[in-house]
Amino acid sequence: MLLDAMMPGYPSGLELLEIIKRDKIMKSKIIIVSAKGQQEDIVAAGRLGCNAYVVKPFTRIHLLDTIHLVMQ
Image 1 (tube, one colour):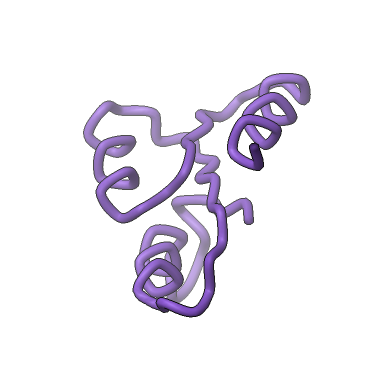
Image 2 (tube, one colour):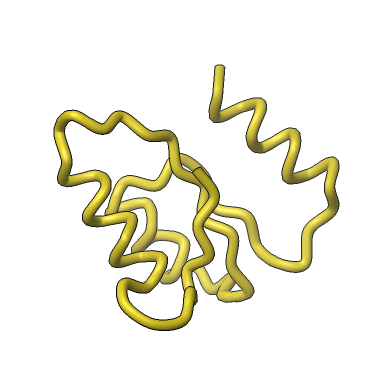
């Protein structure tokens, strides 16, 4: 699943990540894509359980490589 950290409205991407990861039945792999590329943003998403974090702008190849790595 790809989530933008700054999705408009409620829940935000990071709030949705936390909700999904709390669900013990749903075993989704989640990649955060965001323009927020500060180290603290990446660390916070990692603590919430994201499997990868891709900073915008990114190339198609970079995104596809990240998806491939997460799905292995």
